[in-house]
Each structure stands twice: as structure tokens, then as C-alpha cells.
Length: 558
Image 1 (spheres, rainbow, N blue to C red):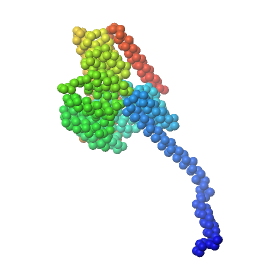
Image 2: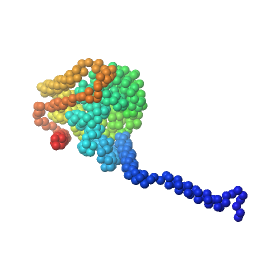
Image 3: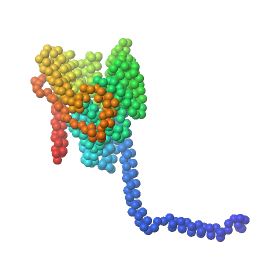
Image 4: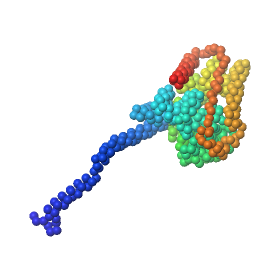
């Protein structure tokens, strides 16, 4: 067929194609590197591949750590015990995968230790942190801080101070280390040292330009301990204004609690209502419901706690408070022990060791005072003790159980045995000694009551003497409340040349034990096995702790 008019001929198309090929070859040749460029590119290629692989591995690590943390948080919110443990195990597995692939990843060691702590595997968590310190050559401050917090929870304040000191040595700008150490000193009664640490935390926050709302809240609570509510309010206002709305929830909650204690019911309720919308609002729900009952609004308190228990079904403290609310009565609102029993059963079923003991404690007292079922109360006291045999709450359970036996049966041998167990856990508790003395006097043992009261007075005098000495170390801070005002602290931070200008010396805590021995005690056979078993358990745990301490000392010396 003849080509159409105006269409290109076959020859012209072939010429064009050939020209195009030649042009493309010339362009390709001009774009190719020279022989020297090829050699340089071949040398840079492995480096580029290595950097790419590192970025991929880092992204994979970040993703696994995120998933592991999310599993742990989901486990915290899960009410079912089986699903909770399954989520914790999945989180543990992800953290271990990260450690195997990146042995120097400090975040993985910290996350794994916290997950194991959630599962009450304290010794294994300590071992993980020790391995993390060895893998990072002691340069990761977060590992030291988590280890210090763990030792503080175990009651070893001296070792906790050493690890906090190591954390700050590794990173002088780690605000959380100063804050956690200050909380430890505040619990120990060393308010002057706690103030020093919080001032240094503020200096570190100013240095790195990080949020510091939680430091403001800690300083406000320190002002409350020093009987200075005006300064506390000033710090709380700074805490509310220092971050976004979700971050200021703890400041609003603590400020509301202060106003509630000082009688400002209207302002307190308004602050609680604002705190309900922030992060960690479960504490605000719990406090608002509790305060509504204290203000006489029992029905309103039950309603708030009931709603909170639906929002946070895995929170043992809210479940226990809601159950306890049904054991109260005020005006036309009556107590209902049947409803309370059902709620207490749900509260103790939550896999929360700390709040389980409190639920058992409240349930046992309710069965004694409201239900008049003394045998059931004894069973609940025992179950609560075995939920955490060496905790401070166990000492409270022993003490209340002893008081019940003194009031109902006046079985002085059993009473003394239970008070002895409580005092073994808390050898510096004046409250246990005074309650013991009161029960001794109620049955006519005046001499023993005086002996216990004198021991309590000596412990109180020693505590006051140490508090005064701690205050004198920084120029008598306790004598002047103005030292805790924000303007005073700000001036102190401005005067400091550097972070090291606020150095802190740590003193060992004086531990006082009961020196005189008690006479051998015998009591009824049905409780003999329980008390003996608990004493054996407590002594065995103490021997393990002493052996562990000796091993750590030997490793340090080597």
C-alpha cells in the first residue's frame, strides 16, 4: 500500500531511529564515571550499605521496643489474670529479642527489668540490670536509676543511694534520677537533702530545657511536709502552668488534695474535676470519690468510684475503695455487706500484689466490725499476709489482727506473737509499739506497756535528732520556710555556676532494731503453724538478702 501523503517514509524513520540510538549511546557514555571514579564508588558502596543496614536495624529495634512497651501497658490495664500474664510474657520476649540483637541497648534492659518487676520477679530483674550495667560498661544512667528505684522498693536505702549516685555520675542532666532520689530521702525523713536534690533537678531541667512539672509537684509536697501550704500552692500553680494540659494532671490532683485537707471543698472539687481529664487520671478519680465520702456525700462517692472501676477495671486501689464504700453508712444511705463482699472478691482477684493486701485488709476489718464474723476475718488477715509476707502492708495486717484478738478474745499470747511479727517487718515503727502498749495495758500488763512506750519514745527522739542534724548540714533549712519559696529556689539556681556547684553528700541511714529479746510465747494450735511458717519464711528471705549483699561487696572489691 502506498504511504499516505504527509506521512514519513520508511527510510526517514530508520534514519531517525539510528540517530536516536547514537545520541542515547553518547549520553550514556558521558554519564558513566571514569575508571578512577568507578574505583572510588566501589570503595564507598560497602560503607553506604553498612550505614543503611544500621538504620534498618535501629528502626527495627525502635519498633520492637515500642511493641514491647505497649504490651506491658496493655497488661497493666488488663483485669483478667491470665491475659495479663500473657501480655507480660510477650513484652518480655520482645525485649529479650532486642538484647540478643543489640546487647548494648540500655532501653531494652530497662524495659525488661520493669516487665519482670511487674511479674514480681524481683531477683531476676536485678540480674537483668546487673547484666545491662556490664554490657554498657556502667555508662547508661537509666539502668542505674531503675536499679536504684528497685532497691529502694526493697527497703535497701543505702544501696539505692549508691546507685542513684552512679546514675548521676553517668549523666548529670538526668532529671528523673534527682527526682527519684529526692523521693527516697523524703520518705526517709531527710527533708533537707530532698530539697537539695530537687533544686539540682530544677537546675538540670533548666540546663537541658526539659519539662519540669513533676519537679514542681515534688517541691510542693516538700512544702506541705514543712507546714508551708502557701509555698506549696505557689509550686502547684507553676506545675499546672509548666506543661500541656495532659501533663499537669498530677499537679492538679495534688493541689486539689491540699485544698481538701485545708477545708476548701469548693476549690478542691473544681481542681479534681479538671484533673479527671488529664493523663493518669485514675488517681484523681480515686481521690475525688474518697473525698466525696469524707465530705458526707456517700452516694456521690459511690457513684464516682463505680464509674472509675468501669473505666479502670485493672486498678486494684479503685476496686478496693469502691468495695469499702459499701461498708460505710451516713444518714439515709445504709451499708450493704453483701454487696461489699462481692466487690471485695473482685478486688482481690485483680493481679495487683500491692493493692491486693489493702483489699484483704479492708475486707478483714469489715468482716470483723460490720459482719461480726471473726473466723472469716482471721482467714482474710492470713491471706493478705501471704500476698506479700515481708511488706509494710503485711505489718499493718499483723498489727490489726493482733488488736482484734486483744479486743475479742483477749488472747495475750497470740496478741504478743502477732505484734512481734509486725515489729520484725518494721523495727522502727512507733505506731506498732504504741498500739501494742495500749493492748497490753487493756489486759492489765502495765509494766510491759510502759516498756513498749519508752522504746517508742527513744525511736522518736532519735528520728528528731537526725532530722535536726540533716537540717543543720545546709544551714538550718528547716528553720526557715522561706527557703522553699519559688523565688528563693530560683535565686539559688541562678547563683550556681554549674550543675556540680550543688554537690550532695549522702549519709547512711541509722537502722535501729529491738535489742531486748521477748520471752518465748505459746498460743493456740490452729494458728501455731501459720505464725511459725511465716517466721521461717521471713528469716529465710533475710538470709538470702544478706548473702546477696555479701556477693555484691565481693564483686565490687574484685
